[in-house]
Every structure is written in C-alpha cells, then in structure tokens.
Length: 341
Image 1 (cartoon, one colour):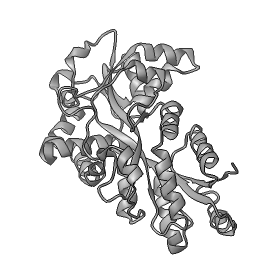
Image 2 (cartoon, helix red, strand yellow):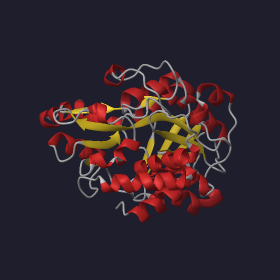
Image 3 (cartoon, helix red, strand yellow):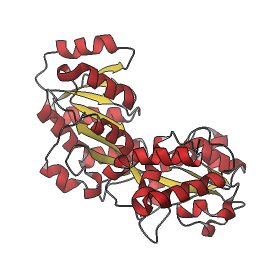
C-alpha cells in the first residue's frame, strides 16, 4: 500500500494541493488524531483487503476540525478519526460529520458505541480505572468512582487536571448518572482529597501511586499496560507495586471511552469512507486495536492482549457515548466552580 502521510499544521499548504492533485479511483483521505504506530497495520490491512489507497493527514483534534472548516466544501477529508467522545462531540457540534446508515455497523457495534443519528461510531474502548499502592492500601476500601470523594481519602488521590478530555468525559458520565448537582458534589469531594495539585499525564498518576506520593489514582488502563511491558526496568518495577480496580461493578459498570470516527460532511469518497468504518468493526481491525495499543475491542469474542485477558471480563457502563460529549460543556463549568485546576 502506498500511504501518503502529512503532519498538520506543518504541511498545511501542500496537503490540499497534494490530495487534490491525485487521480486515484480507489482512495480514502483520512484525517487522524490518533498517533499510534500500530494504526499503520489498520491501514495496510484495509488496503490489502479492498485495494483502496489511504492518504493520511495527522494533527490533534482541534487542528483537524479547524482545517476541515477552513477547507469548506473543497475539503478532501473523507474520515475524521480521533479519541474520546468529547472530541468527537466537538467535531459533531461544528458540523463536521454526516449521518451514516450501515447494517454492518448496526450489527457489529453495541448500541452504546453508535451515535443515535449515525454521525460517528466507537471502535475501541479505554477503561478509566482506579489504581492503588499494593503495599499500603487495602483495595476493598474503594469500589466506585463515588468513593474517590469519600473524606477518608483526604490527601490520598492523584488525578490529572480538568483540561484533560478523559477527566471531562468521566465527569460527563457522572452528570448523566447523578445530575449536575450530584456530579458537582462529587467533583468537589475529589478536589478535597487530592494529594497534590493536578500535574502530568495518566502515567504520572500511576507512578505517583507507585512512589507513595498518593495511595490511589485514576488513569486509562492502557497506560498501566505500557508500564508493565516497558523496556525500562524501573518502570516495570513501579507498575508491579500498583494494583488496578475496575470500579462500579455492583451497579452501572466501569466508565469507558472510545477511539472513534465519522464520515466527514461532503466526503468526496463517501462509499469508500463507509467501507472503512465497516472495516474498523471487522475482526481483523478489532484485533489490531486490541493488540496494537492495548485497547479493549468493542466487538465481542475478539482476542485481546494477554495482560487484558488476565483481568478477565468486567462490567462496563453502557450509557451511550454521545452523552459524554453532550455533557462536556457542563462538566467544564463544574470543574471551574469547584477549583479543579
């Protein structure tokens, strides 16, 4: 497969001209905010199966949204691919996506992973788990996200800042389950229990638990898997000091977010774009998601990474992922009100 790759915004001036200048009957122009080397396997396998050449433009979600808007009706974009329902909702809110009706997607994907109007779809899952220090914390003390706000954990919680989209979506889920008032009360409780001001990424929260800076932390599951598999002895040793909890198993289930995509409004290669979305729901693509970035597949009975397999099955929150985006603006306002920096 011949893949044309550009990185936004550095190649902004040449991308449109390059895409426009290509005369390829079977092509797909993919705007991607996923930056995993393993995704190359997705595109290679798609081209091998279909003969459709994939042209890739990379950037963060906001860059890609802005670019598609600037290109207008002349945009060559067929697909926008990104991570987190909050970012997908932002693209939706800006009118980036068009509705898609596909029997394949309806059959393969759970209802919770499909936008109600077919504007975008989730193809991989990321569990927002809780971590604890094996040496000085009894995991039976915490069973839910709600427990993170319990006063008994004052000064013991590490978690990222409020501008992190993963935390915004977690709070958006709390809004859905507890209402705005209940979600704000929870957020205030977590702020009261922070071991330090929010700093760093998800990996830093897990390492904070390993070092004893905090007893419990919140992070997406695949960051923990990366530490367990790290080539760095110190990182592997740190990960072994940490245990993982999948919260809320006695009620709604663990909060999950997604890697997802939609067909861009005005896509010049619409049929190829829909075919690509359907491919992402195939066993082949689902196995690549599961093995490449240690994400959970959204389709049942897909072989997972051995670490993920060792955790067994756990209950996930089946709220439709679209509400995580719809509740995002209120989540940000709550974060501001409670002083979650």
